[in-house]
Length: 510
Ligand SMILES: [Zn+2]
Picture 1 (cartoon, protein in one colour):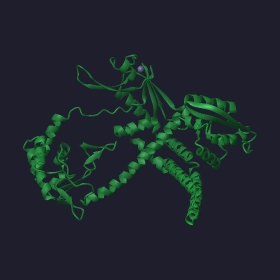
Picture 2 (tube, protein in one colour):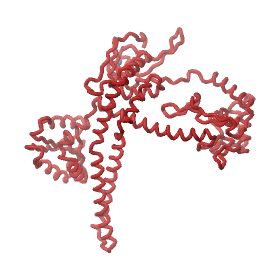
Picture 3 (tube, helix red, strand yellow):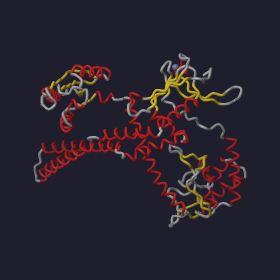
Picture 4 (cartoon, protein in one colour):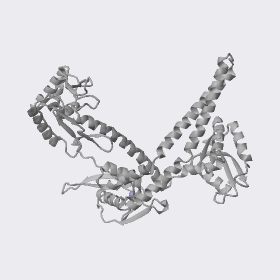
């Protein structure tokens, strides 16, 4: 258990603030929950906010030197100090004594609204970093149009020439020919691999060949002289999907030298297609859009995705099923069809959350929230910079003294202490800059982000899931109804829309 003290403060001219008794009661509850051992309570009752009547506060600061407690619990941070500078000053003193300040209210702020606004900001950070890579891709596209190599390792059989175009690597080109001929003659991957490896051929990374490297080589269009860029599409999770061709593919016939005859290449593609049909069935991964958001209304357990095959029709159906029911059979809630509930949620988001008027309101709300979070950070940064300059000057002075021949331990100790302080302030600066970055958006940027949700219904399921993660608070499933709690009134979080829907579907066995 951590030892803590309580500090409560009340100024009588502020009608809205909690009385000292209420502050202390709330802090005690918090301490119990978070396992703090309260060893003392300090309280100041000021006649007005401006009078500097903080006897107990100063006593607490003094007592912190004794190091019998390591935490000061306050109700709200503004109870701790009168202003930011003051706060930084006393916090630093406490820190030097190994004591930190914890505000219970700021910690307890987990209202649905702030959770949602926080996740919007998170989504934005992702969105804008994705845009950045979009810009980089544009540069790649322009290179490809000129059939100039885009960087990275060229395919086996090629090197990059001085003009950044592909040239043939004769030794490797032999390996490419062996691969194509053997494959079209019906040899297995295993046969081809042992042929290559026993002849000492190596991949571009100077490693023995493996199955994956063969697959890539057998599909490579550059071997027939067609320069291809952007063949593979990345899914929203950032992974390449090898089995789907990107609609934005770029092909330049004759854009690079040819290694394989076209007939042979086409024959190989034909065989690959055939093999794929035999091998890769039922591979599609099911993406449950609502996992983590959907709960059993009966027992409170979360519900998770579950697939089942109808014994007669052999058709596969997908459900969300109560976990408690799955594991312990102690709940008897009927499973809910994945498609039904997901469509209902998407439909609602599309119609009500991403309609123009709501988007406009949301933009304001997000902008204000971000601005509020930004508040004070630039000032704080300035004060840190100032502190840093002061420390730097001090360090210079000490070093000057040491250089001029004053060699004593006190000076050395002082220098160490100053260096530590400098590191601490530098860390604070970095932290503040990160914080600032997270909320520093223009209204236009927020607007662009919000309007991108208009495409909700045609988005990839991975992106849909991200949107649901942000805007859906939770969904409760009952025997006869669904309750969806969705962020669609951004003006007042207490009026988060609760939609109640009659439940008509349900699998009797699930
Ligand atoms: Zn249940």
